[in-house]
Length: 224
Ligand code: 5RP
Image (cartoon, rainbow, N blue to C red):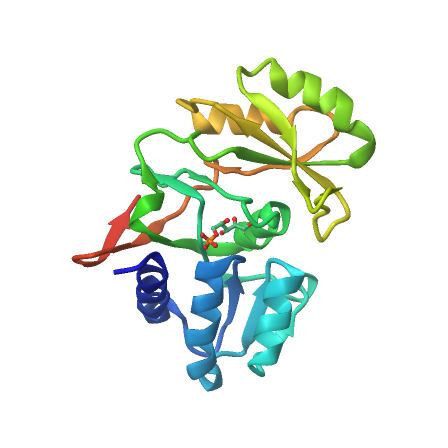
């Protein structure tokens, strides 16, 4: 099976976790996109969705799914999103699509975080995937110096010769070459650096469930 087929399989499986008549939190990325396409098929069953990025909001709207502002929503049963890496304990690296801050905010309102990922994302230890950090642009140099002391190599994310900007107008610094043995501790440590908006470690609020796409079928990992 291709990686896209595995992503589509977990996106289909995630539909079982959608709660009727409720608002659902929706993540960002190619796996989340497959999920949105599946969600469109049962859109009559839900009130609508809260999007974790402008791209997700646009895709939801293109399917005729109502998009709510998070400020109008005080409860969601589930938030469904992909990950760049996930451990056997449910800690994740996210932010490959630069949506980490809004993802973390929307996820914080949901009771359950359902991670949907192809099998290549499951790791023993986080860090092979460069760790994204969203940073206020004027703090680029000072944050880069502080991130360098953690042992990895911080690199400004650039696309077509320009710094990538998030939906919030900030830059992304990817830290390459980390071995993250204590993700919750590192999440706290990086979030404490002045100028950092969010680190793409989701460990203090890890996934509750991971639907993992494998050639043998979708496996369900529960972390509670
Ligand atoms: C975006 C994310 C994505 O969930 C993560 O990058 C996984 O993406 P994909 O589903 O395309 O593999 O965190 O900021």
